[in-house]
Amino acid sequence: MRIRIVDAFTDRPFSGNPAGVLLLDSFPDDPWLQKVAAEVNLSETAFAHPLPEGGDADWALRWFTPTTEVDMCGHATLATAHVLHTTGAATGTVRFAARCGILGATAEEDGTLTMDFPTSSLTAVPVPDGLEEALGAEIVSVHDTAAHIGDLVVEVRDEATVRALTPDFAALVRLSGRGVIVTAAAEQPERGYDFVSRGFFPGVGIDEDPVTGSAHTALAPFWSARLGRDELTGLQGGARTGLVRTRLRGDRTLLTGHAVTVIEGELRA
Image: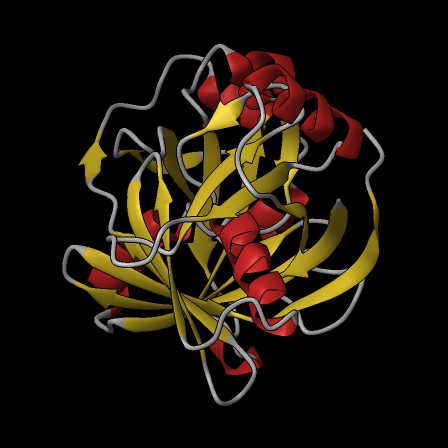
């Protein structure tokens, strides 16, 4: 079977967030899927297979980190849609059936893909004991997110603070659900982005995820409320970065980005 590595939320190789993508006829047993994801050893590997015509979705989609299955993943969904469109397996809008519901991905004329995801709720919570020490930064606010995400959105003072973070990952495991998204307003919006973020997910085997699409379903309403605009662009990442364009549409958030295939090969397993 063919396996591809796709860099998502970027238009050039070796940046953005890499994901493994396998298109299958059906899903094998879960232990096999997990072993493949561990072998690929990226933050997410996506597995998809076609569904019968006439239903609510066109493809079934699942995502695995090297250690566990997750409910929602943006960059691996973008990577899967990219593979479907570049191989001719799909055109226009593709509907995916996933653990978090029906997700859409539409090919745009400019070469980007726009995904339709549920908007996350945001609930202000007290700063957990030990979180400032684990991040090594002063915290402005903390918000919890919806069940399918399970992250803490942590606002800090400025972009420089986000860029300089060197978290204690062992401590973060004890202080969050899926992970922690640290964010701040952009210091120079004229550079093409409105806010910055970094995502840390040691609890699911990922110390830092370069560009987390699903987190932007929470970052979009968070920053839209503060900046007064429904269309924004987020820059995420540390050593690797990528851009996510967000459009808030009530209970749905549209996430737009590029993707590029960097490796294609044959899985013999």
